[in-house]
Length: 490
Image (cartoon, rainbow, N blue to C red; front, side, top):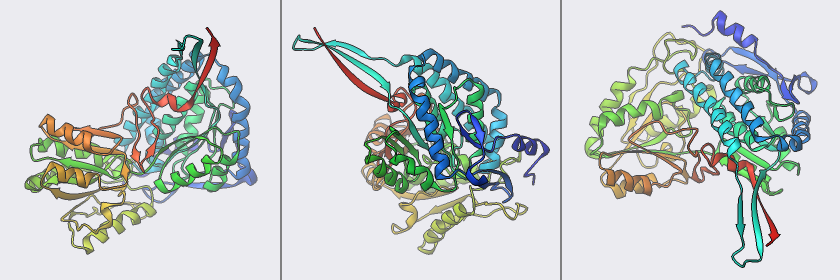
């Protein structure tokens, strides 16, 4: 199966590999590098600069220096830079898809979807940049004029995950730029090439030097040490709950603004009155995107007991059509996981459930895959014992874990029996039932009778231990603004 091609090799060789600081790409201190691995075959795609603590500090210095001037830049000018970035990203969407599929291993159809989705954040926040508003009031007591004014929060530290190399950065960078903030980004060490390419695109779009810094590093501590610098005014993080909470505690020492998008354990509730073809079709969009390595992917499939067998038969029929292979192979419809570490995590969860008595179906890889690739087969689990770890642990792989219920009340109890609350999915043809479930499930986002949930024009975020704050929508830019009250005599 094809893992590389002359086109891909030429593209990868043309990508920037240095730290992006003050508008230029630089070598890391001491010339340190890290390898970017292709999960499709285990080969080294590229060597990139691996920033040190001093490099991260240099990046922070550059955005702090640029902050005052950027905050005073007219909103229309900021908007036009974002709009230009959107246009470049659309024009180069196929190159972006190839880069993401190479470093993440994800199949090209999914990477093309992210290329379009990520670009849309730049268009959305280009429009929001010129919509930042304030307020003018009279005090009810009649003795003061009250002006409510919004200002950029200041220099931002952003940390992004590996599973959406473009979109997770776009959801943070675009609103920061729109609001008048400067920002330093640490991309995941597994997938830094896309973020470095995005930095190049933003420079081409006219972003002034110093407004953005991108510092890949093999040491997360070297980067998170920036939160101890009082010049930083905001942390935005997407990743695991454990790490996010540790960073938030560190950020609290300087009372930083914090927004966190953390782990999920999404329920996928299928009522007996659901259109089972719609519910089965939606599994493809909700679960199989990125081979299941998506924070909002359903983790717990809760199916009303009298339709479980019919639903599973329909789901298996659809999953059998997937073609596993290298992410950049045009024939592949799902690729490897992000690395052998991720394969082992998923395998442990599935093996634990099976040992405890769960029923397993599918779960076989075809012959002919690259020996060093990080592949895991699509797997369906049912009759899962309550004590299985898979009920409470985010799977992040192509595993459909099914449990049953008999009443709406029971479905809600199971759905809410988790400390997480990022996303949820509900399927019912009865509007009253669908709304009862959607309103009753403790989650920041609920999709009803559909598998696609995210939209740049909608607020994205969770409740409980899935984080705080929102990205996207009208709310997204507010995360990068401070509210100032100015009082004048009447």
